[in-house]
Every structure is written in structure tokens, then in C-alpha cells.
Length: 404
Ligand code: NAD
Ligand code: MG
Image (tube, rainbow, N blue to C red):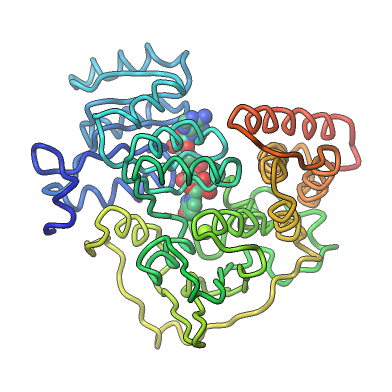
């Protein structure tokens, strides 16, 4: 890599990367790309939720300066494990330590790959501290998009979206600035494992069926979100914050092959698209190397072998979550935070077998109805909304066996 990347390199000439959510699907893809370029990147911080053995295994392999586990009760286990492995890695625990490290001199690049609103504190800390922020944690933008984007603008943090659609748009625009010459953006959706099924058939689908995504290999929460189309709804809100376009100029097309990741249409009628195999290492390599292109381990696209590209409109009758998310975006204020929190609680209950698949949109809709949108003036107000929406949705689940 050359000059443009060198400007943010550390003293020893390598960029120091913090991977938050290291034990997850995006974390694994990020570490795979980083390990292909030892001369340019070093793993400085590894952070995970509660799985100490998995985090320790990654520390042995990548030898970070710091390891953080979110669960404070797991600190001793992490510290003992690092000592027994003979590693100099320092052990930390808790959400605050994670945010502090993300903002510290320990790293210059942060891969935000924690799942859910739990990723907000560290994402926001990295944005405020002016890091290069490889942002996979879409829930933090849905919950507090204005705050994250404003923090990055103030500090000069460079956000590179990692969500494949947003990364595709970033590549087409070569920035995050959708100027007046952009007519609309089209996000593609695979349609998930239940594409084409009528609503009645979705009543009895199981968590195992819902997480078996036809095209992408991902963590359980986003896999369920893909099956309900809530993932695309969250992504519309995410695109609104990242690229500054209103709901009406953010379109969605179902594209089962998942090879075209997004399209940008300009005022002159020209459309640019980004294509590639469905493998998140491409987006992560863009984020790590930008504006250079670096090897990701992903092969190129053989369109003759793929044969065809199909497109169809989303079915918002069978999959109402996309409509609910758009309504929350238009309502503004606290509505997206309520949508996100209710969805996290409902998806978790579905994965535990406590509610049926169709209860997910029903619960999100009921929680939104119970908490009409108000202005969201501060981070505290948004966090309070998030907590209240979680309580409201949990009560609805406890009270309503009809969902089972
Ligand atoms: P995953 O479930 O595979 O991994 C989640 C990671 O977050 C794990 O390392 C886990 O330990 C960590 N974590 C969970 N709770 C935590 C907490 N309270 N504090 C700290 N860490 C915590 O999820 P994933 O599929 O890798 O997705 C991660 C994020 O990236 C999500 O926001 C998802 O929407 C987004 N994303 C993922 C993909 C994909 O292909 N997997 C694509 C686009 C966007
Ligand atoms: Mg996506």
C-alpha cells in the first residue's frame, strides 16, 4: 500500500486495528483479511461479549495488546487464560473499558462488529475519537444515527460502511457524500430463506429454518432479521444516516442471487452498481485499505457460471417489518430506537422458541403503537427510550400466549 494509507499508520508503520465483536461472523472475516497483510495491519484490541475461550483462542493467534470481555464477571477467567497462554496481552472487562479502548491511542482503526444496541457506546466512542470506523453494527445507526454521524463529522472520523449494500454505495460514490446528482439509491435484498412464501405459511417456521440463510453466512440475529426483512428496514434507516437521503429516494429490490449489492442512480439516468460474491471480506478489505484496494481472499465473479440476475419487488404483506421500519424512519425522533429495541427483544424470544415467527412484526408494531414518537434530543433520551421499549416488548411477550 502507498501514501494515502501511510498517513494514518502507527509508529512502526502498521495500522493498529481494534476488532470489537471479534468472536462473531464479521469479526472472523475482519481477522482473516487483516492476517493476509501482516506488513500493513496489526491486531491491537480484541473484544467480545461473553465467550472467553473463543476470545482466548483469537488472542493466541493474533497477539493483541489488549483483550476485552463485555461481561465483567469474566475478567478473572480472561486474565488467567492470557497468563497461562504466556501472552503479554492485557485483560479488561466491561462496556466502559471497551469504549475507552476504542477511543484510546491503542488503535487507529476500529471494526465495529458487535451485534445490537450493545455496540453503541464503543461505536460512538470511536466516532468521537476520530478513528477510521469500519461500521458493521447497523443497530447503533438505527438507534442514534444523528449522534454517530455528527460525532464523526466533528472529530474527522472516517466512517466506512461495512454492511455490504452500504459498502457498495460507498464504492459507487467513492465517498459517503450523496450529492445533488444522486436521484436514488437501490438496496438489494436476498429475500431470505422464506422468499416467495405467503404469510400463512410463515406461521410455523422454526428458528433453525430462519437462520439458514440461502446466500450469506451470518450471526443468528441478523439471519433472523434477513428472514423477516427487518434487516432491509434497518438498512434503509442506516442508508438515510450514512448518505443523507430521505426515505422516498431509498428503494429496495429483492435480488435472490445476492451478487449486485446496491445501485446508485444519478440525475442523468446513469446507474452504477457494485457486484461481487456474497462474502463480507470484500467490504472489510475496502474498509481496511481505502482508498487503496487490497487482497481479501474473495475470488472474482464468474457471471457466465452464475447465469442470471433476477429482481422482484419485496412482499411487505408477508414481511411487514420493512414497512414498519420505513414508517419509523418517516416518524423520526424516538421511533427508530423503539423499532430497533422491540425487534431485538422479539428476535431473541423467537430464537429461544418462546414466540412464533409472525409474532416478531406483530410485537414491533404493538411496541411502536404503545410508544408514539417523540423528539430524541440527547443520547440519554435515546437510551431511556431503548430501555423502555425493551420493557414494553417483554411485557407484551409475557402477556400474550397468542404469539406462541
Ligand atoms: P455475531 O452474532 O456473529 O457476532 C456478534 C459479536 O458481538 C460476537 O463477537 C459477540 O461476542 C459480540 N457481542 C455480543 N453482545 C455483546 C456485548 N453486549 N458487548 C460486546 N460484544 C458483544 O454477529 P455478526 O453476524 O458478526 O454481526 C455483527 C454486526 O454486523 C451486526 O450489527 C450485524 O447486523 C452486522 N452485519 C453483519 C453481517 C454479516 O455478514 N454477518 C453483514 C452486515 C452487517
Ligand atoms: Mg446488508
